[in-house]
Each structure stands twice: as structure tokens, then as C-alpha cells.
Amino acid sequence: MAAAVAAAACGCGPVSQAAAARPAAARTGDSPARPRLPGKGGGPAATPAPRPAAPACPVPPRGVLSAAPGGGKTVALTFDDGPGRSTAAILAILRRYRVPATFFNIGQNIAAQPGLVRREAAAGHALGDHTWDHPHLRALTAAAQSAQIARTAAGQERAAGTVPCLFRPPYGEYDAATLALAGRQRMAVWLWSVDTQDWMADGSGSAYWVARVTGRAEAGAAQRHPVILMHNQVKGNPATVAALPAVIRFYQSRGYRLVAL
Image (cartoon, rainbow, N blue to C red; front, side, top):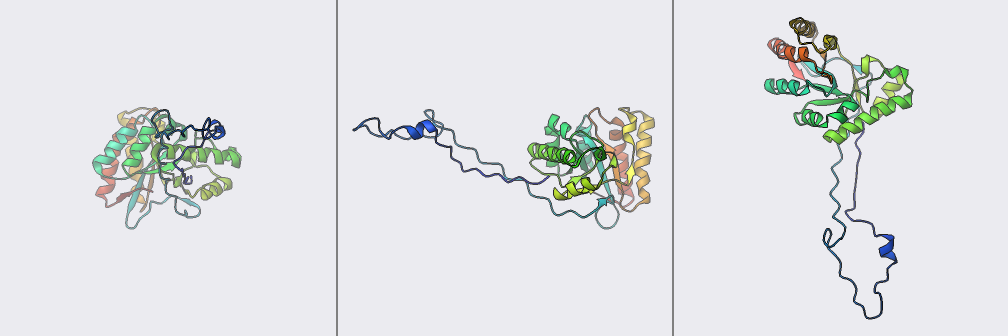
């Protein structure tokens, strides 16, 4: 799954220098000008009310997490690199089965498809920060890492009105600076425990890739709290979409509760 930005506005516009310099009356005996209503007769329009600030994130646990939360048997479906061509189809499947998921979005994709991010948030799914353009973080300075994280968090807030409380480093790579930066932004750092390798299908929806993604996802049943890594990349992941209903039914039939991170 950035910090909340509190904004306040007074609701009044500043007085221009020209207006301040004008005398109250042009000459003795002139009556003062009548005030004009906002938005009428050339007066300033009323200042719109500011959007409420997004709520701040709770203090995250230390370290890197990879076990689905909750008691009993739980499984978390996570989708990286979106939003993309398959996001709408994934959302439709999750809605059909009434299960939550977690989307780790890339900042530049949020900027390109803000409506899909709003749909993810409106459906109640968890949204996480996956950097601006998916770099190898260990190759970046701390300042560059901070910019990657902060820019994406700001993009999510603009798109959906929420701040990410979750962070997933691209490729699962991070260093001490990454963990410190995420902690200061109150983001829990999440990896995964089951890798479907669905990105390797490279846009194919063939029966081979559907079976491979399904099988690798279902291998998480050897764990009590698996976190499953899947993707919804810009170019689309049709094998993931085709496999998803079977994966959901598989875990539900084995007594797992599907949860968001």
C-alpha cells in the first residue's frame, strides 16, 4: 500500500494593488462604489472549498512483510505495474467474487490512467506505491529513491484522493535507504511469497500460460498466509485474467479468506 497533505483556504481573494491604491472616492461628494457580488459584474469568483486531506497512514511495522494478514488461513492477491489494459477485467472478476485485492501502481501509469486508479479505490481495494517508473532502487541515491516514492504517492492522491500506506520495491530490490524512506512516509514494505511469473507470458493468453499461472498461484496452498504476485501491466496480462477466477475458487474451496494487505 506518501503522507497526507493538509490544505486550507480562507475563501477570500486578495485585494489587488490597484484597488488598494484607489481613493475611497474620486472627489468630494462622490458616493462610494457599491460592492459587487462574487462572480457578478466582473467581481472575483468565490473560492471553491478545498478537498479534504487524505487520512494519514498508521505507523507501519518494521522490516519487510510477505505473509498475508489476518487469523486462520488468509491469502492476498496482489497486482503490480498497473494500471494497464487488464485492470478493468481484473476489477470485474474481483467484484463478481466479492473479494479484495491490492494494487501496487506505477506513478507514470497512474498519470496516464487516473480513472482506473479511482475505480480501484472506489471498489475498496488497497493501493500501494510501486515507484514512478520501476527502477532498480539500489542503483539510485537516497534522494532519487525519495523522489520516485513521493512523486507516485502524490499522483495517487491526485487521482483517488488517498495516500498509499503500502510500498513494494520493483524487482523486490531495496536497501537501507529504501526502508528508511518508506518508514518516514509511513508505508509498510511488502514483498510476496508466491511468484506466478505471469509477466513472462509477454501478453499471451494461450492455454499453456493460463495453466502455468494458475498452477504457480495455487502452489501457495503450501503456506498458511501466502501473498501472491501477479501483474496488470500496460500492455495487458490476458493469461492472468483467465487464470484469476480459478485461483480465487481454489483458495476459497480450501478455507482461505482472501484479504487485502
